[in-house]
Image 1 (tube, chains in turn red, blue):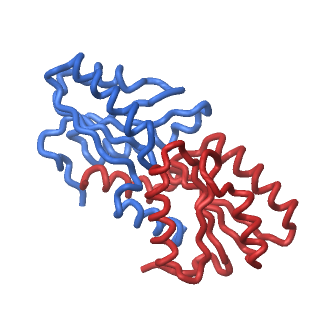
Image 2 (cartoon, rainbow over the protein chains, first blue to last red):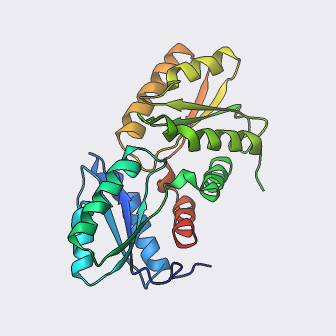
Image 3 (cartoon, rainbow over the protein chains, first blue to last red):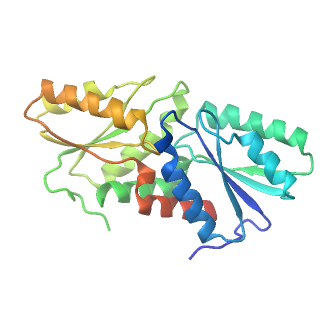
Length: 128
Length: 128
């Protein structure tokens, strides 16, 4: 059902999450990371947080670059486009590109910008 | 594919969202609300926000109660369980139950607590 390398050359996916004070907040993201890694074993799948939790996005990108990854996809696991995805994320990616000019970094939209994701949410609401 | 009245008697669904400074942040939630209303035409589907956007959850519950709705389902459109879903939401629902003792209010889990939702997110990541 799933393609392990859908984007032709992507070596690592970073799930970029907001972070929260409550430690348990991250548990479903840990599950998501593990399930994605299982679904796409050829990809190096990492979690990174904007704030309140570690590791932060800069250090994850640095680790991936140091490990020789060159083509990264950053998936903002945010519900909707706001300042975190439209300002913070481009700024952090811009800074990473200055540190690592050889990296190819793509960034993805937030979840509910995608019609198929909205349909999945509606199915979950109506068929709990 | 979808059942219009899956919970046997629910009359209204409130999509409870965080809110943001950026006005455009709510656009995908407006789309989600409209698409859910279309998928379940028998349900009164409303958006409500925790902060930064209107209407707030208390006023939406009051409007639904005043309109004669008695069985409400509140869906926190939050990615993961944090203080907003574990503290703010129960507090707001508790206060609403004091104002409207005749209401039956159920609350749902956050999105990524659900394995099927995580699988949908993984599909979206791997098959953009």
